[in-house]
Image 1 (tube, rainbow, N blue to C red):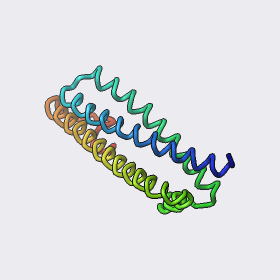
Image 2 (spheres, rainbow, N blue to C red):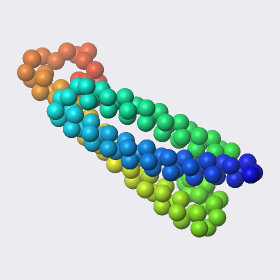
Image 3 (cartoon, rainbow, N blue to C red):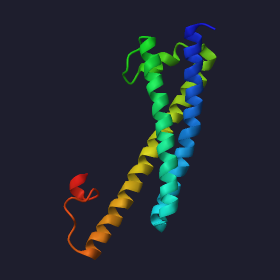
Image 4 (cartoon, rainbow, N blue to C red):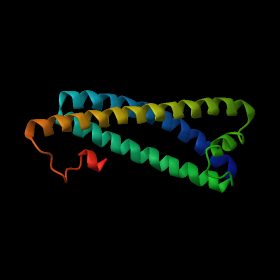
Length: 146
């Protein structure tokens, strides 16, 4: 198998693996929200560990994709993946393009869930501040730190 074919196969595998991992991340982010609502610290800690591992794995694949894009001389802009997908045979282009779009939608959904979880944490913090009195200005979760 040529180097080009190996890199294309790697990208194809990575897209499939990312889809699976982003689905898992989405479930974990939803479960984290429920854990935050219930203030279940052991569940929150466990989910945070899983989420961090997933993010490390996803980040590694994204860095590898960037290296493959560079190896093919396709650039690093928003259209680079479109150019990369155009290197596949026509039947594979459509399937991989659909998977790439699904991956982008999942990443967007996970980002929205993360924002929602952050807003819930901020709300919890504001409630605690109002119950306990004046906020600590050095507090990591104070509005000034955002």
